[in-house]
Length: 343
Image (tube, rainbow, N blue to C red; front, side, top):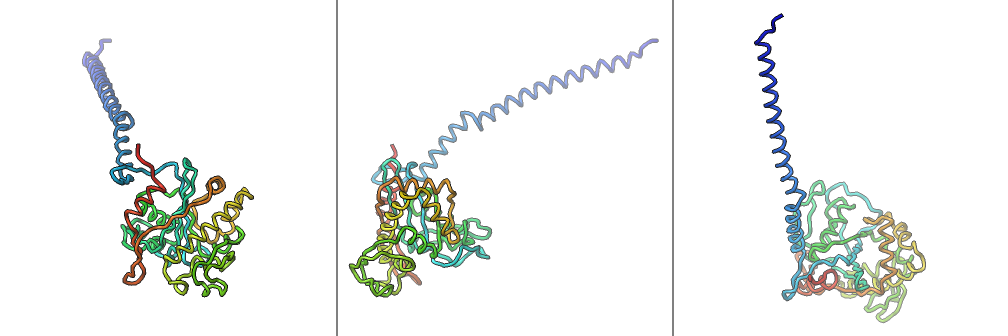
């Protein structure tokens, strides 16, 4: 039988078209892969590495502090732990709003320098005026407000978000340092921890007979239970009624407490974990068992703490006392405790 010539021609034509399309597809794929390879190299290769280096430089520059043309950067070998006390009693509870009625009563930032083998504690005045980070609905950032750092904890539910907002405020106050870990506690925790370390010895420096009739100037006492709490917290009806006076008592108390804590940690390798467990109802922290052991090792290893306070001026504001830190002193203090010279 004779074959249809048109059918044969169609077969040849379709074969030719398929070959052309296949060739175009291969060329297109090659070009696409080549171009993508270039793009891939931009994202993950040398071009992006150079950009990443510039980004790192920009990041470092944003953290840099300059004193007399000398550049300083946060010291990665300094471990920091923030301790905070909230001015309320009772177990930690969630607020039913994005605001709560709790304020920070005291703040102490512990710095362990692994190279210099030192422990330094900075007491931060709760009346310090600064641009405090503000949280809005849903815990989202809503800018800042110029007010006391004590109000940093008021934003949020009173739980982790409020604690971390206080951490952010402290980091912002101190030039952008990183707080490695934190523990924010209700006042109920103070008497418990105080007695766990065996009480805290202090020498009464001013008339505190409103707290206890025996608290006369130059009287040595060992604080226990509720008296320890009143010693570090009471303000309006004792001495001159100022927070600066209270900070001097807190400085003395923290020194005695820390020394006794070091002794207890040396005697019991699990002391800090047990202490946190004893006050867990009154505590918000980002520390797990591993972090607590790391913190405990610092306490045990490093020598006695040197305590620092902020220099500045306390003024009567429209409603409350406002503390304005001396910026030059605060910058120098920040560098001394948390930064190192940029080589």
